[in-house]
Length: 369
Image (cartoon, rainbow, N blue to C red):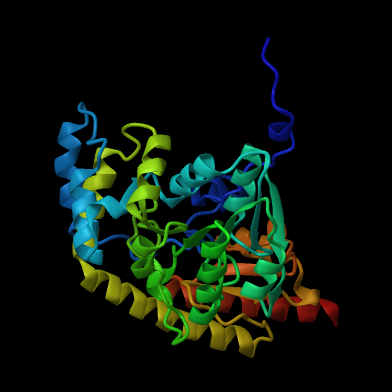
């Protein structure tokens, strides 16, 4: 007789951003825009499409389970040996593989109070306790994280930059964490999903350090700046010993053929990445300025989105925006019910959002008179 595990019964499923199609069915509208899931509004590199079409002619065949050519491309891009890489069906799968490899019911893990929600959904699958470290002005603190560690701590997870706050830990803070975790045999996982957007002088990637430490793993994704969210590809970098263990926990053929070929093509087109980042920063500057002009506070960001505080007199704005065909991300599940997360879209989308917010606020003021 089977029994559903008690810790599974207690879990809450992941709630994604509302799809455009669902919104339009619900409200009977068209022409909607999604500014909720931090996708690339300009799509992917044009060089990716013909590669996918060519690979599509071989869909009767299993993909290369060793992901040889994508690993080779990543190794060249980062100037590291191929043995330092593992590739997954998005970086989310890799985070799960890491947890599956090192966590058990006797362990606990430490993460920031506002860390990416996937971590807190995955960790309970392995029966571990989660300790949440407080942040200062939404910025994670090495001292706060270290203070929560004990002899049962197996892992510290840091999304840097952080989703949904958009903030990042300074290089010195990461070095403190790495030094502490290395000395105490604690795995340090750094999620760099938004690395390409970070331009703070205090920010640094931990990938160059990862081959030299036996406790450090860094994840990246092709879902954000590369514009391949719909095809699912991500990778992680660590020392060869760690990678060998993670590979044992990876299911065969986990990265489909289209994803492998698309990621290789996307990686080659760094001009597209540079242009995406430029336009994203332009959009963020506009959003921050215009949101401030209408009294909506924003948190300084190192990503492609902005976390904005909803004025108390404007609490229904997320649902009101959806009724006009604009989807933004509510942050109730993060304990940030008074905030929303807005992806920087095309300039046309950004202008539409601000224009709609202004109109909604004007109408509300008139109704209150």
